[in-house]
Amino acid sequence: VGTSVIDFGTSGTTVAEFNNVDVTGVGDLSVENWTDYVDYFIAATSPGTQGATPMNKVVFTGYDGDKTKWIPLAGGDGQLTPVPEPSTYGAIVLGSAAGLVLWVRRRRAIARRAVVLPPRALLFHRRLISTLETSPLPITHPSSNTRDTATVRGRET
Image (tube, rainbow, N blue to C red; front, side, top):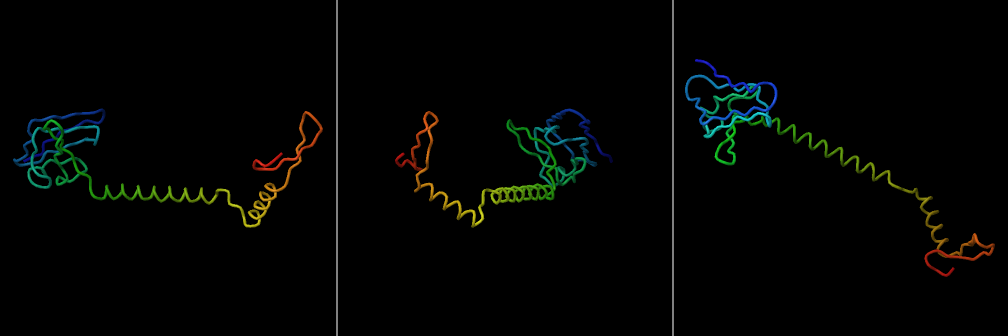
């Protein structure tokens, strides 16, 4: 009665490829130093269904045996991997929601800081525009000392 160990080591990518992973006897298969997206435990056939014997006898360090799953890959082989706890997905969703809230708050703060004129300044601004549109402006040409008049928005000069 014992536990067999597959140790993926501590650095670099390791690929362990087997035709068959049979853990129907007594004991477990312990997978140590395995890192997701770095190390690969490949099997040509599925050792069983997730959460049921014999699949739950393949135990990755830090995970429960019921979390081991065989994920089919192109070409017929599959990867044995632990499925993260639901709390992991919860943490991902919570982090994404917090990021979204911060992004929305920042966008609103930027929009509030945009050029917002108080009512008196806005009234002055409107009067100034109105005056410039209707009143001629004196213009002095640099080449001569003659003064012409011009108005805004394409009216006669």
